Length: 137
Image (cartoon, rainbow, N blue to C red; front, side, top):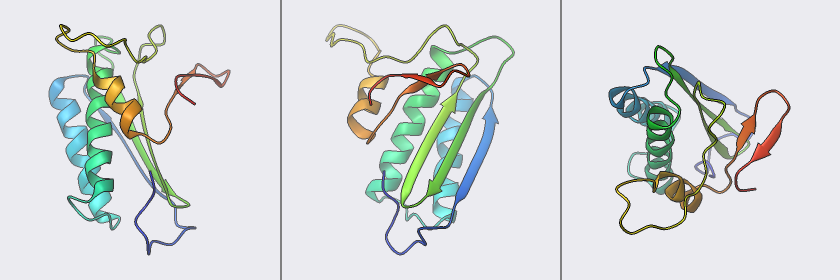
C-alpha cells in the first residue's frame, strides 16, 4: 500500500501492540490501527485507511480463528516507511500458515485470505527464523 502524498519519504513510523486472541481483541486491533493511522496523517475514509482497516480486520480474525493457542496473544505491527504501509500480524501457531482457499460458495467462512490477496499489494508468511516465505509473492 502506498502512503499519502505529502508525507516525508524518510520518516518511519511504527505501531506495535499485542491483543488477546479473541474476537474482541481482533476488533480492537482494527480500531487502534485506524486511530494510529489517523495520527500519522492518513485521513479517515480514504482508500488507504479503508484498505488498511480491512486488512487488519481479516488478518486479526485469521489469527484469532486459525492461529489461536490458549493463553497466548497475537501481535499487530504497522510500519509506514518510504511511502509504503506494511501490516504484520503474528500469532502463536507455527504449524498453520495462512493460505488462500479454493472458492466454495457453500462455505460459511474461509474468505479472509482471499480478501487479503485481493487488497494487499503483496503478502506472505515467514516460517520460523529461516526466513523462508510462503504465500503470494
